[in-house]
Length: 301
Image 1 (spheres, rainbow, N blue to C red):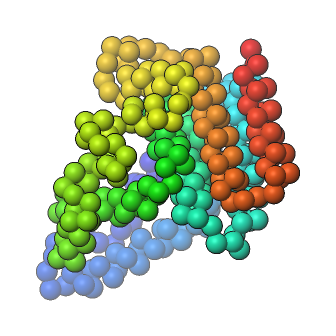
Image 2 (cartoon, one colour):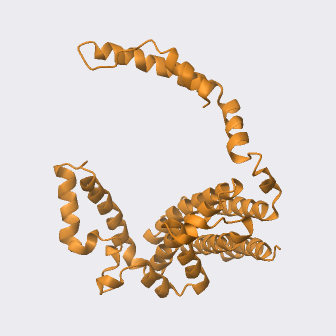
Image 3 (tube, helix red, strand yellow):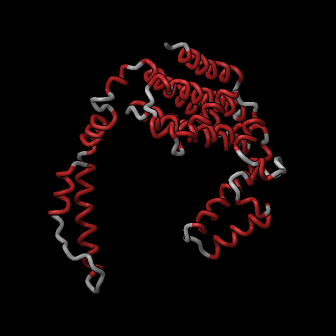
């Protein structure tokens, strides 16, 4: 939306009085109709607008060279294949009644594929520091998923914690009501006061509340120390530090973060196919497609 459009939107508005009085209802109707007219015109020109946004924001002149990057192209290829494999798998199992763990892995995998795609778009735009920041969230998501795969009995508790968190957030932002408060307290009565903590859902496995943190989960999952080291690096970009303030990251420095992200996606798709009880042949073929792409990516110079 360019400046000329905004200026025209303001100058052509038939209303100048926006105070609330006995005539407000009529003015609201006029204003709503006016905005609808403009939004309809946006929808009519949607294709042209999207191309404009793509040209100006995705392939701006200073980052258009990234379209020729072998690394970026391979990242897109991996994403395209991973998404296609998930869609194929999901279509196969749609009619089956799967386990709670399978349902969780499916939802998490969808979210992590979206986040991987977001990281890729950031890289295409030359936002390399932001790629590192987003890796941190993807890492934490992966660890939680792997911990639940190891402890499937925690899945219903984790789901309860997700629901509870919504009620707790409603209270924190002052958007609660008696019904929400009642449901909120029911969870606390069921699981205890420390259920409200971020990792309160791990209480039955991790007795010491000070150990209920991402590091403990990562160790339990036996994750390669390399990925945790990258997580610590990413944390320096999330929080203000000498690194985040003064470092200018280049494209060569983010390859290791994409390698880690690919590993996460391969693992999650493998878990999903296993929990969905796909035929062994399907699993082996689909999994190895991604493994081969991942390996070829690592060998890029």
